[in-house]
Length: 195
Image 1 (tube, rainbow, N blue to C red):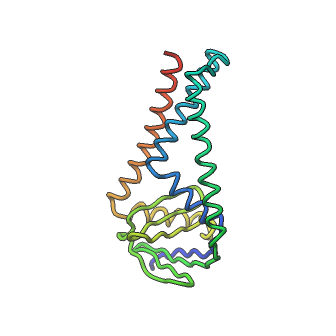
Image 2 (cartoon, rainbow, N blue to C red):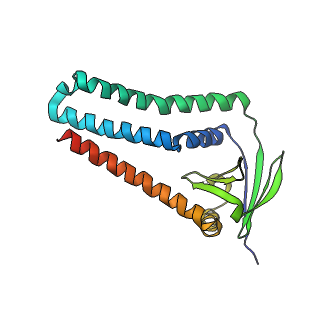
Image 3 (tube, rainbow, N blue to C red):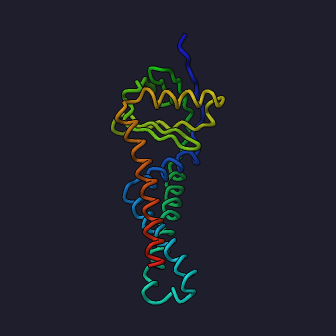
C-alpha cells in the first residue's frame, strides 16, 4: 500500500514573513553583497585587533560605512516584509497529502494535484519546506504541520529522490557555491588584514 503523509495547518503571518524574507535573502545579488559585507566585517575586526582604534582612519571610514549599510539592509527588508504581510494577511487553512508520485493540496480558494516532476525548484529549511511549481506557484509547508519526524523525513526523501535530478543537483550546487563564497570571503579578509 502506498504511504501517504498528511499535513494540515493554518498559514500565519510568521510563515509568510519567513517566506518573503527567504526569497529576498536568497537572491544572488543579496548573497554577494552580504559576502562582501561579511568579508569587510572580518577584515575590520582583524584590523582593529592588529592596529588598535587607528583602524578607524579616513581609509577605513568607507569600509565602516559599507558595514553599517550591510547590516541595515537585512533589518529594513525584514521590517518591510512584516508591514506588507500585516496589511493584507488573511488566515487560510491548507491541507496537503504527499506520496511517492507527488502531492495534493487544498485551500479555501484552490485545490489540485502536483507531480514531483512538476516541481521546478525547492528549498528545505530548518522550519519549512518550500516547493515552487509552474511560474508563480509556491507551496509552503511548515515542519509543525507534519505529525512526526518520520513523516518529515519521508517528505524530504521524496523531494530529493523524485524531483527532477537536474533540479536536485542545482540545489546542491547552489549550497556548495554559497559555502565556497563564505570560505573565499574569510580567506580574502584575513589575507588583507595581515598583508
